[in-house]
Length: 273
Image (cartoon, rainbow, N blue to C red; front, top):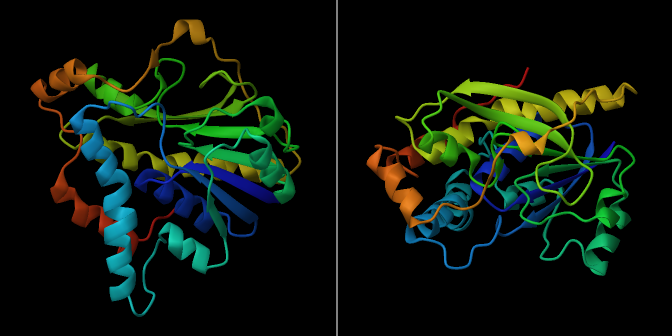
């Protein structure tokens, strides 16, 4: 099967893509990357620091340094550049819904599109291309936590659990298509927001892999409608919300966790079986 992955150029997307490709290597993949999720103009300083951590620190510094040191190729997971070196098509895309973007997607002839943290709202010409549709892995429980940074809002609301939702994208409404599956996990507020987000993707990637297997077997993915009127939509937090988050003892990120994240790539193999 030909699978187009739409993702964001950040650490969480990279981790999820690696887990997916390692668990289902028999397919032909192409990857298109956005550079941001949602509007990023005039973001609070704390969110800019988070963006540096999620994107530039790993993409431009840690991955590059680790690749130079890893002479034996013993790493478990690959950077975006490493995926390219393995022959997987990886490219940035700024405007997927414009004519050039639609042409590029159609040229790949995907049977399925998988969206993971992709930063652009898909319009119908893109949605209509793959025969098996577009599925999106959302890092939040739908419909209660639609929008961006669902884990942040769950931590702020002092939830005891959080999770992922795999759902169809069948229109340009955000996080609104039929739900295929969900996962739920204890929310550990002793860990940073970013750690909790990254911890979702082992189970989340398995949701995607399981759905791909069902499609391969000729089965229709079972899904249920989502009543978005019963849920909430969240955007990026402002300074007031961030201050409340900090006052509760939460942290967006923890630089001491860098070593642990790196170990996921270079020492600790993931298992989706």
